[in-house]
Image (cartoon, rainbow, N blue to C red; front, side, top):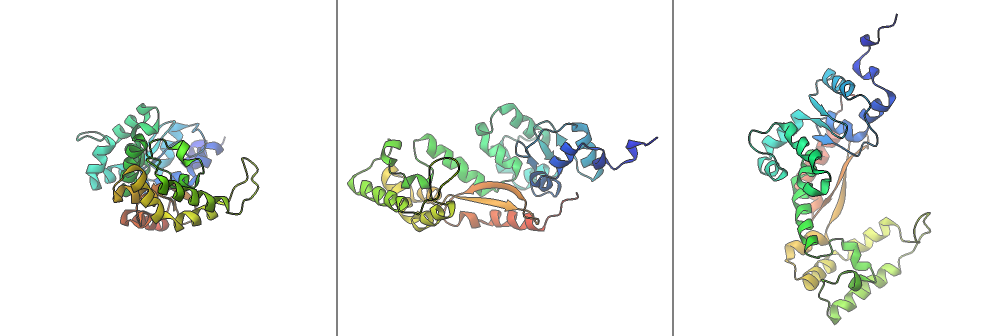
Length: 273
């Protein structure tokens, strides 16, 4: 009679669990590029112990719960390399690495500690701290999405902004430029320009938007620049798989040393499966 236990650990997994292991987000954990993944592998693990056994068989000490897969070695290295950021994330001297995952699961929603979330999924410190500052400004009533400056209803949607006649005229000019972009029909929602057209318009006006942030909310130049140059960065593996996405802040925030280092690491890393 066939003895299933003689099969390699990965072959004993269900198709569902094998599919999860081959998701780019999980391959990033296996290659050591990112410490953990959760929520974004688009499926529910059926056999937690089977996944643990499979990862152990390829030399990875992993915490596996219904909601998290975490490479303990990678988390421990990040704590050692970035202790101040780890403490901001909730780690305390003497904690086990699993304690961070336990704290995350206990939160209920990731937004209760975005530093912890970013630390576990491997976002660069510059992006994590920029996002943390963005959240503070947002709670103060600042509009933190730079594309909102193209909205013709900007004044109505941002009551905390102090808008004089010059500011009103500049906002109207931005809204007019957006309105003149070629629009495409979309299957869902109203007709609108392509994302590429909006990005090009935004790039041409980031200095103007930074100045408007300073004018309308009296922000410092550094805070205004951080929001005006907010960009989305995707980290791709050597196969083009999307390991993670995050926002960067400030002029050349997308070219910060820790962002470039993570991109390089992802391109060169090899997953054992």
